[in-house]
Image (cartoon, rainbow, N blue to C red; front, side, top):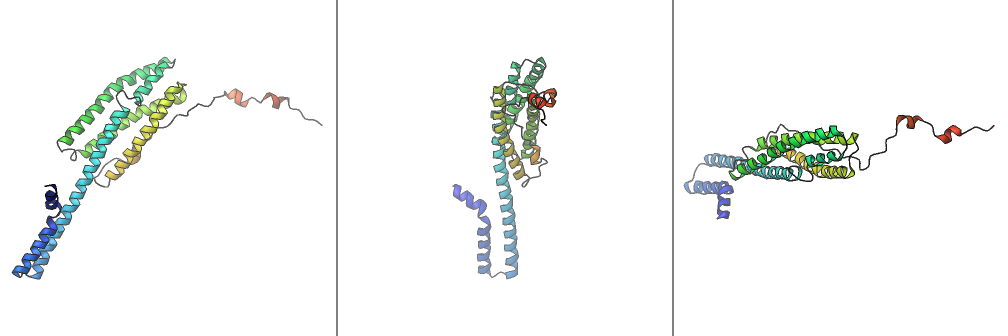
Length: 242
């Protein structure tokens, strides 16, 4: 049954051309008329094949976009250990009340963000079951890009805080593990956007999916300006012999 459907879907053009050729020989049709009919059938067949190829590419990208969205929701949202919000919670161990205020504000944002992620994935899966995902493909791509951009803002804020404040080493290691996996996701997202731009018009540039910055494993010891400019004892005691 599947083979028959495939033949009907993709083999109708050559079958029709062959049938017209046979009939034209049997009834002795004019060569010019037959050529026009065969040419029209061939053009229609090529257009149908091109549209079919485009639909297959859209379906393939739709599946990859669903995978990306599911991976993002599973690995970087919710209570995952690689969620930037879970990493921010590690700042509560730092004795700086101002950081606690910021971490509490991020905790409120986490609840809203997780709800958004869950709703996004549920809507995607519903449209896929209803075979409407291809129609809303561009809208879902823009929403995933927007969702990721909001998420990246928290990543950037954490990096700026961690670069200025001494944070626990385990929090630094956890963040760097997050950066490794998140950047792999971001690069995959960029590649998918580049491929989609060849199929449909997407107003998203691949570089707009930004990569996270990694923290140094061990922060360099910072010396005060006075120690940097103060000459060493040995240099000051050094004399000159005549």
